[in-house]
Image (tube, rainbow, N blue to C red):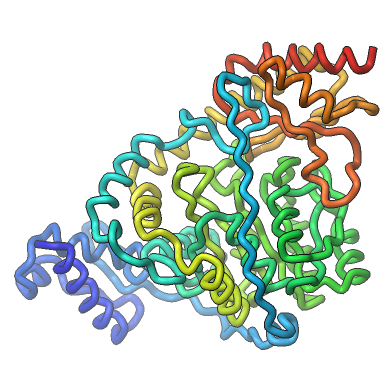
Length: 469
């Protein structure tokens, strides 16, 4: 049977499910085979697609049942009308950053090295996607329905029973998180408005704010994240209607907030009627802890979450999701349509293929100890060769160490000197939306060739000592 048969069976079952009560048992696979004149494989594929969409659940040895939808209450999203203000759109493409240095020790890397990626899964997925209808089709503006369902289901697994989980209809697939940031900032903060940000924070978010003409109200942040009182003070004094935050494994500091702090900041968003833009970029990069997005505790539409697959699946698959509810979601979608119209169907199908493959979970399990080993190796190299430098906290996830250098360090000179000797480092000034709090380096432990960490740090140490001698 063809994919058309699978889709037809799935569509007829969706109609049946719409009229069935939660917990109702679907007709048996044997009866569906007889009814549709299809093979058992085709019927099973149709049922698996419904399971990915969150419509059914299969109980081995018992049958397949209509999934019960958790509903705590109807969400009142009317507050967003006042919070959004006038409709302002000015699509601006993000500025590209392309750094390529052959044969250098790359301590500045922003993406994991190829050996930390599911390369075999990605290659196979791209091959299958190229042979499918996705190779010549236009994706819906909001994204592939099955991929949207996967993003929603991932968050639903982490959502407590008393909270209504995100639905596939809340998800917008975008061509990378940078594109998502631009769209969300324009839609929610308003062109020329103000946005609250941690300092330091992700340089791409600072760039996106600049592209939208936003004024940044900075909040100091460190190994434990920002202080709640500082966030509230910035909201009150700036009049911002949005804040951009990284509660799990922040880039560049690696900070992960406590559960208590997450709850307190979410309460602030509700009290002040503002949007909390959550960047869940490191969802797949937990080492000693797991990411638990704030959006799983919010069904009032205050949290807008950006979840990327680009870093954890492949830089070649620029696929991310924006999860938002109510009028905010519609405004973000309109901005996405104006800027990029839609995300490549073939890339979406390949990304979905990877994350729904049984090997994906195995890859993530293997990734954790690999990241831990590289993190610890880089820490050892820093402690051995740069004892005067300070790593303020050992991150429990993410890809980077945030390293405080001695006062008076000329970062630009250090970068240039090291580059001439084949070592690439990243001065931390670019991660501060306000004046830098000191001379920092952001060092990646996920780059290629970890066996070169010690020799690379020896080069950094030599040039640093030359500055301070």
